[in-house]
Length: 86
Image 1 (cartoon, rainbow, N blue to C red):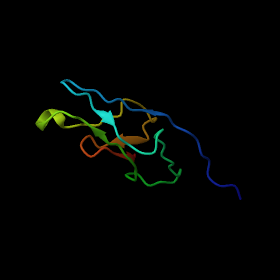
Image 2: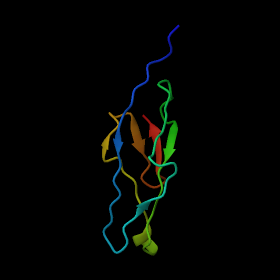
Image 3: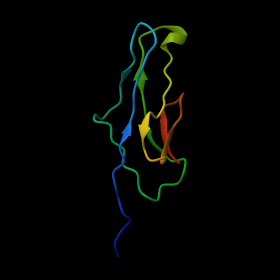
């Protein structure tokens, strides 16, 4: 019996800033890759984004957004950076 079909979905992530120090991605491994089984339940955490901003206080807080791709299959928690299946 043949197993489930697998395919690749590209997701584009952008880190931006509005003040002094631009945030930088600090995730490992690089390039960033997550393997998700086709039968993964909705809400499964498949990756944890992490960016660091050198600014202090509220200016150093980072929020995460999915800027492009994923074909509606993923969502990003804007505060924690967790990428989940939808």
